[in-house]
Image (cartoon, helix red, strand yellow):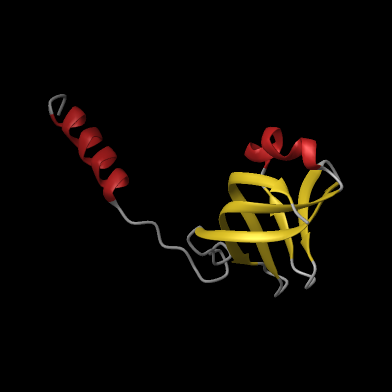
Length: 109
């Protein structure tokens, strides 16, 4: 019996590691697309300690925190950002647009 216990524990752990996790549709996270290359112009504002880029067409991008150092000097200015962005569908039916990587930022005319 003593020799079977370590084997039984190892089998249980191995099964737990490789067993798939079943997630119901209600528990599934909001759908998110892959980051894609963008070039967008708008006004960079800081609201609620977050930078947001507001396009003239009404679309708003959340600029993720890892970009704060690059964009902070451009607050309240019209800018052009080249980088990577992705969108995700929120549970309230709205879409959140995020700039996840700022390659370049420059003042726009």
